[in-house]
Amino acid sequence: MRFLRKLVQMSSKVAFAFAGLHTLDEMTRDYFQPFYGSFINIPVSFIERAATRQLLANPDEDFYLDYTPEALDKIYDLTHGQPYLVQLMGFLLVRRYNDFVFEQGRTRNPTFTVEDVKAVVDDPKFFQQGNYYFDGVWSQALQGAADQQEVLKVLALHPEGLSQEAINMDEENLQEALKTLKRHDVVEETEGRWRIIVELFRRWVFENKMN
Image 1 (cartoon, rainbow, N blue to C red):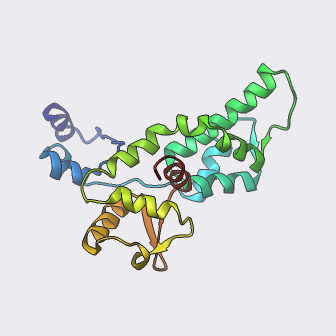
Image 2 (cartoon, rainbow, N blue to C red):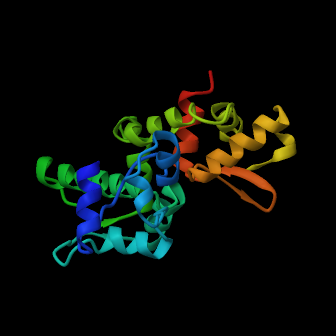
């Protein structure tokens, strides 16, 4: 870390992009690492809807497959533009198409529809493929504020969201848990109702962590 810090201090042409569950502020505070405190932090969160559509439908000039507008909207509604999940959805859709056309020797329209998206998500292997993200977020909720996982279990039952007053938990713990989960882009508050931001993660919690 000292070496990397020296590189940055010596050249304005060196930059680093960090990907992970912890924020740089947390890494500076928790690990007392001066490297992380040497920069102006620029957080990168979810991809916007329009950018998600562009990323999926036009990844490069030679990409010959397409999506219906409804399919692109469905992917965004499920992922909320979470980069890893957007990439995973696109990858699995293309792999499904390649298997259908090249492995099975069948023909089909080269345009992905809502039905294709549902078929990918309904495949049990999907959540296994995305387990790096799902289990990572879930495991992170064990760190820091207490009762984060309990909050997620409650919110997983309510895709439309739930008011803070309706969450039957210790008030102080609840506020700290919600604050931490919000800082990690796991939950959000809209019009007084708290909800899990990424619908696919909500489904994963509902299916795997309720018992």
